[in-house]
Image (cartoon, rainbow, N blue to C red; front, side):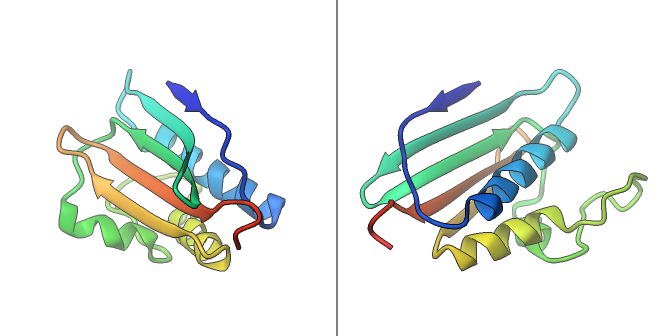
Length: 123
């Protein structure tokens, strides 16, 4: 499901596009069969907010922070061409854009991530 509202932000368009692509890729890749990915944008106060959540497997809340460290994956048995860099790149891009990043394990499984960018003209 997508709920897209006008929420302009300033910054490097290629980097912000990479941030969004990495979030969507992770939400799809680490989901359950038949699961959902919810994406939304909105303006909230002086911030442009991007939210992405999925219905993936349960994640221990105390392990969420690890997902944003380079080369960290919760499922080490998975064999694919990914190395655990996607969310660390997301974090680096967020920091470079003075954005706040939050990530929460969802009680029913999956992950909910929000990036709070400064609104365009306020940075």
